[in-house]
Length: 179
Image (cartoon, rainbow, N blue to C red):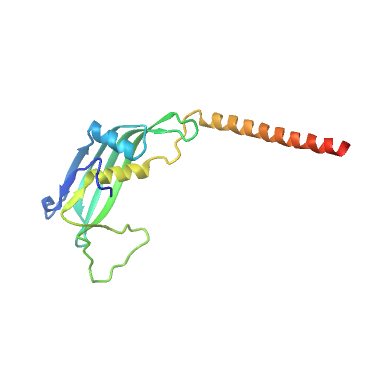
């Protein structure tokens, strides 16, 4: 986690009820959206919110954060560099173990189960969770609507240039044979 978090909403774990869990809704301010956009190298981030619930898991010391992160982002097309809108609704399910508590009992781990992340201290940063989930959900290679046509034109030009280069080499070869 970076030293300075762009979108931070800390939840004090001591406020988590003994049973029942705790619901939450958080929203980034315009300034926080701009800072997150810089961090994730987005053209813009108009909105970022995270709604969900923190519950204690059946396993001692484990917390589960479930919810939905929503974002209205704009990425840059990797082909044309044009802005590409991305409206995301990201399901979130994260597991945390308080103070890195390890039990000495045998635990059966399934490859499908997510291993809990250790939490140091009494704070859970819901804003950082939202940003991390947004980063994972963004398209790593966004394409504008006209990207396929632009790629075809680049490929056609490259093929033509390759043919021209080989034609020039063939002409040189033919000239050298005539001598």
